[in-house]
Amino acid sequence: MSDAISASEPQFLAVGQGAAARDIAYVVRPAREGNNGPALVWLSGYRSDMEGTKAIELDRLAAESGLSCIRFDYSGHGVSKGAFTEGTISRWLEEALGVIAHTRLERVILVGSSMGGWIALRLAQEFAKRADAPKLQGMVLIAPAPDFTSDLIEPNLTKKEKTSLAERGFFEERSEYSPEPNIYTRALIEDGRENQVLKGIIEVGCPVHILQGMKDPDVPFQHAMKLVEHLPADDVVLTFIRDGDHRLSRPQDIERMLFAVKEMAD
Image 1 (cartoon, rainbow, N blue to C red):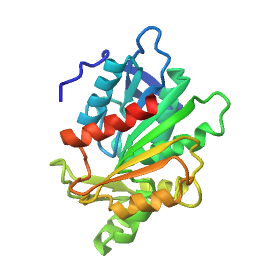
Image 2: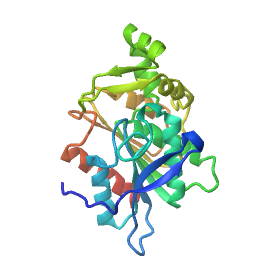
Image 3: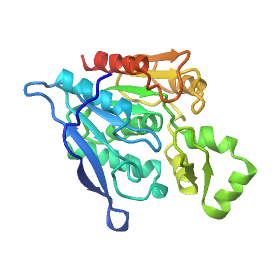
Image 4: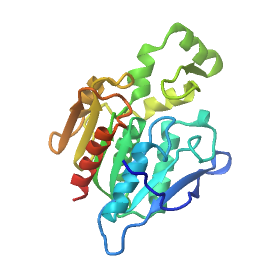
């Protein structure tokens, strides 16, 4: 895989009001002149940012195809401002909506990794309520983790973790991907319940392609199967990668992601 050259230095967009205001970093690769294809929008996972391997490779595909590509960092992630521990699904969803509205996109393909898959599904729900929202042409979801706080974290809390949540408002968990521990706050978990999508049919209104590793230690492949049950019966593809992990960042995994995006863009 070749390295993509960033379209430009990050710009910053103010999202939120008063004490909740934070500057969100985003990068826009403009479409090639005359190219009216959909914009590619990258949605990172929990504690990931817009400079990750998959995000950069998506940007490279956009450059080669002449498509627009939007990448951004949630508050508390990457170079965006704001405290990570204040982050919630509602807060990060608001930032995604803000960046998309600011860049005035007409048609989009959402590419979401892990928690970014949850944000993508919530975006689809919010787009359906807004007359000025862009048309959603497709979604590519990589190891999607919708409702992970209620489905994957809460049922497995230890007594020590429950006590920490009650007394400190958060608990820590060793991360496989960083020397710093993962931090899960009571606010994140409580807000997650308000953003659950696996409660009925999710009317996304577009084709969906899910890529899921069967050796994913963080989001079991059964979770992807559960998601499929909540999507409309048509235009949903689920690809299992037998030896795939959670990140799905190997060259062969990246190729699968890019192929899925190209199919939707065409």
